[in-house]
Amino acid sequence: MPFAPTPHLLVEADGPVTIVTLNNPEMRNAFLDDMHEGMQEIWMHLAADHSCRAVVLTGAGKAFSAGGNIPDFIRSYEDPDHRRLSLRGAKRLMDAMAEFPKPIVAAINGPAVGLGCSVAVSCDLVLIAESTFMADTHVNIGLVCGDGGAVAWPLMMSLLKAKEYLLTGERIPAAEAVALGLANRTVPDDKLMEEATALAHKLAAQPAQALQETKRALNMHLQAAIALVAPFALSAEGESFATEDVRRTIETFKKQA
Image 1: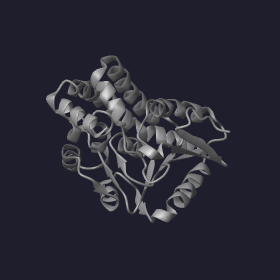
Image 2 (image 1 turned 45 degrees about the vertical axis):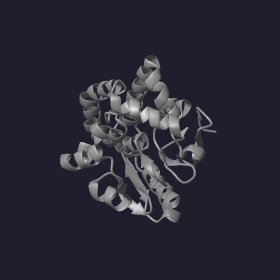
Image 3 (image 1 turned 120 degrees about the horizontal axis):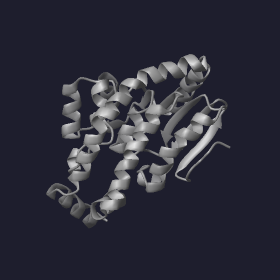
Image 4 (image 1 turned 120 degrees about the vertical axis):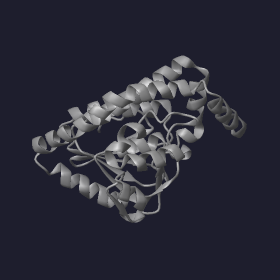
């Protein structure tokens, strides 16, 4: 049985392909603390697992991931130590996925929002269900977009388009995500896992050294962007918690709880 760091991550083997499922469907796979930590850890274990040649990453239920969860957001606002640890964890997750040597196919089965969107586009190939969407809504709730979009999106699309969607937080329908460069292709909803798994098996059958080192060379562009942009972006995101905009967001969330 492959390594599973938390019940909120399901890990199963399909021959040389490991399927990792974000498993918090009641909260639309929002990143609970243990899920976030597990996602930081799992890539090291899968890298060392010689039976794993490729990975499919998807979400349980009707969403890929709604991103950060509200109780953790409130705790980050109220507890500076937790906020620091959370933002450092965000950097570790970016680094871990960029450094992972084996191909990751994202199967975006439902909305991928905020951190969920960042994780999705950190994969190597992205298949997205026709009916769904992506969005990075950091700015909408008063946060600097520090943990993904501001770092990676300008490598995938025009800078003007990245600004449009990051500054407005608007939803990006599946077909538009493909047109922009955030996904490789749309897939009928009922065929998504079948096609994602088949693609992962195709990658798993490629010569391992050639495939993995080509991925490593390509990801050097991403790692350079992480090294250049992420320290400022995450620091600025931390500063967001002192703003009046975030205070108002927290008040709204507490009223809804």
